[in-house]
Length: 300
Image (tube, rainbow, N blue to C red):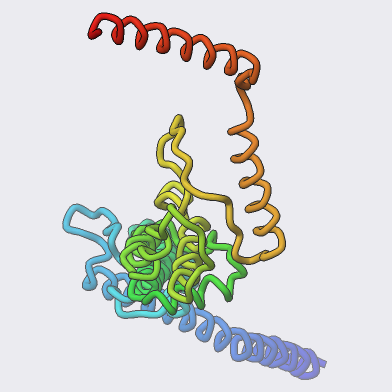
């Protein structure tokens, strides 16, 4: 009976030892593995902090370098985002760790915040680069437009259906085009066209008229006076009969109308009376006859 009790006790002890051994052998490796994973994250975070300090992300006074960018730090934006995740994860592990590791919590938070600012700087830098490229592209376009000759300006005018609002205001493109067109012999031939008589436009003058219309579309205040137009607001000088070379029938009607007005202007005013003229003639004759008789008598 005694031996039976001892055997039961031994079996129970062995059973408890087996259960304890099983628990220890199943949970301890997990704890060791978890601890090892945390240590890896902590170690990686320390290396990240050391790396960015070496790259000047943190200056000697412990402040953030506002000029830091991914390119200056030698990493891509995606790599920096991964480093931020590691630092945030490590901060939690350090916070739960020993007192000696608490100092790393603030370092992880500091560098995490700084790296987020670097990403913001990267976006701003990208926008600035796009704006810079756009400005350079606009300058190149403006320079190309400024180099246009008169024929190219006409082509541009026709392609845009006479709408010159697409011309850039910057770069003095408009003023350059106006000066080029006004310096052409065709433009000068058109604006200096004789105003003392009328004639159809020559081929040269027609091209000059086109240049005139282009300048009119760019800036009407820059044009010289058209042929036959007075530059004085109160000028009474009659230059010529209105002539429109693009509409012959209309031009002839204008010419006839102007001629008739000119003739009619001569018919206006007072008209000499025939009876008064006859009486004046007879009186003058009698006076002269009397003077002649007197002179004859005196001369005897």
